[in-house]
Amino acid sequence: MKNGRHIVKEVLSYIGSYKLLLFLSVVIASASVALTLYLPVILGNAIDLIVLKGGVNLEKLCKLLAEAAMLSVFTAFLQWIMSTINNKITYNVVRDVRNEAFKKIEKLPLSYLDRHSTGDIVSRVISDADQFSDGLLMGFTQVFTGIATIVGTLVFMVRINVFTAAVVIVLTPLSLFVARFISKRTYDMFKLQSETRAEQTSLINEMIGGMEVVKAYGREEEVVEKFAEVNERIEKVSLKAIFFSSITNPATRFVNNIVYAGVALIGAFQAINGAMSIGGLSAFLAYANQYTKPFNEISGIITEFQNAIACAGRLLELINEKEETSDGENILDDNVGEVEIRGLDFSYTKDKSLIEDLNLSVKKGQRVAIVGPTGCGKTTIINLLMRFYDADKGSIEVEGINIEDIKRRSLRRSYGMVLQDTWLRAGTIRDNIVMGRKDATDEEVIRAAKAAHAHSFITKLKNGYDTVIDENGSGLSKGQMQLLCIARVMLLLPPMLILDEATSSIDTRTEIQIQRAFNRLMEGRTSFIVAHRLSTIREADIILVMKAGKVIEQGSHDELLSRKGFYSELYYSSFAETA
Image: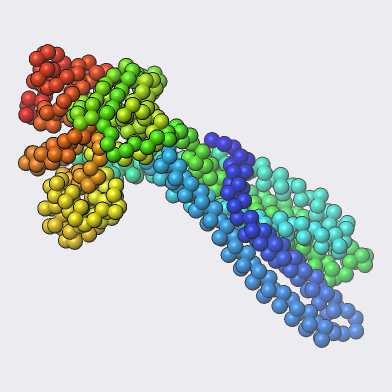
């Protein structure tokens, strides 16, 4: 992760998109500070009128007090406008960063998502962005006005009495040194706090998503203990971060009180000797107080600011992640189907090879079944065909074009994909079916649902195709969720199909009906079928038998049985039992 200085620089580049608002904020802040600093001059003059010999000039005094009241009201109005502008800048910047982070997630390679837990990524985009916005808002609200106040008070103090102002200037670096000394030690602690918070979010997501498994295996106590351990770590790192950052404000206040006391003492002597009026001393003390106030405020926001920088660092780390490799330029038409794999090597990690020297030639309309024990690389081939991962060596061609030269969107739209794990979105039943074809008519949606044998259960739902479900398919069985995914593909009618154990969550009777629908769908379409059941691979034109990442046998069902090799062994030990 980048250090704090680089993170601030990158954040400033986002703020630069709102230069006009930033300029307005600075102008209004300067005007507000100038008016605030002019107020002690008016009040000082009023005090001088009161202490003058010969009686109080009530007319001038009332005029000065009325001027001070009007000045206070107008200053408050300017501060309200400045606060509104700062809010707009802050939340626009956070919106931009969050949008960019979300877009980046869609462009990241799957390998990144494999390396990072869902909870960690969600924590960066949601929680870290919120923490970042809080710190940024405080920075805009207090830092701008604070700097302007410091500069302005120095100018006014020098005008009143140069010697006393010099005392203030000499003692100022003490406050800055204290604040900087402590802030250096808080950044790393807030960074650790943010990372531990992400670990906690990940654990919560994991527990809620797998609650059935947790309960089934009686792991409730273990999960609670794990959560308590992470929670305790958050407590410890948070206390350390807060402890060090909380020292800043009292320390700077102590230094500033020394400054104020020194100014009061020296100013009193100046007033006694006639070098300064009583009103001037009063104004000077007000300026000394206003001068030290920004240091207290700035030191007070160090806690939030350091936390914000740490959170911004995690968010920007996501945004700066390396995207998928460059996209191709070729567009596939709707009549593709010939696939050629030549000398393909692939591994998820460099130290552990998976697929080595894979060669396969598939003609248009052929059905290719991929079988083998768990972990042999069946689903990996699907990931490579869809270009979710790029091959380390060799090539995959569709209609003679290397898939690295084809636009990913075009390549993936050429496949209809039904996986073992269902994926639904929050919305209506219809929304989930038309995901790949937003322009589909109601008749086409119903036709696809009927082909997938989903129409019957959909019509029995309270609102039919307008029934709203969440991403977990609330109210639907696993089999019904799978049928919706199949209906989604039935609606698309793509030129090629990928079926990764697509009927695993469906009962035997429905599976027979679905298989018939798939048979009709696969007619004339190149199909890749990852399966464990004999019924789904018996009629395949080519069966790839994989073991340890290599295709060790290749041929039709009857051919492979006659060879009495590994496929024959698999068939008689596993497939025959489910035939």
